[in-house]
Amino acid sequence: MRSHDQGRTWGDWSIIACDEERRRNFSETALVPFADGTWVVFMRSECVYGVPYELITCRAVSSERGRTWSAPEPCAAAGVYGCLALPDGGIAVAAQNTCGWGLTISYDYGRTWDYALPATYAPTRTGVLDEKTFWIYDQHGAIVSLYRRA
Image (cartoon, rainbow, N blue to C red; front, side, top):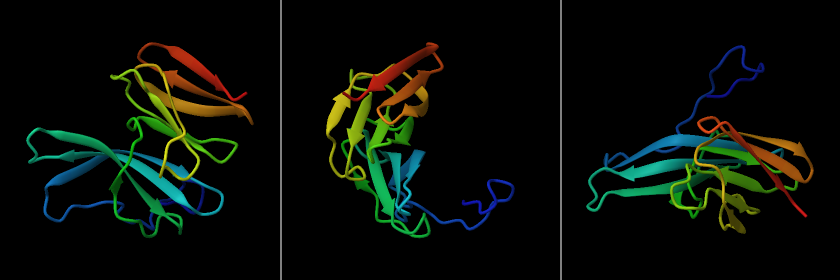
């Protein structure tokens, strides 16, 4: 759902992803809006009938501020827990870190990934400090991690 009055009212909704065959669930959605009107969403995708059980991150893109979406496609983001648009035009996607890599960075709306970096276990909030620095906050461990581009 979108708001056109800074969150006072909501409406103008669209469906990002749906599996009409009911084989795949989409959840834990993280949205990154860009100034050019492009929106990128990363979401957890589970195949409910797969053996072995399948859990992947998918992405969908809208070029018209979320009114229509591309079909969800698997992507190599570490997962979705929080994400943000970087000041230099990139995307940082943070994941619940169970594998050693918890942060991935892309400069082409998540088609490919330039960096995979360590992050805290449960990065629930993110933000930008300046044109070279952003932060991730892990509320479970009460840890703030700073990332600075050289």
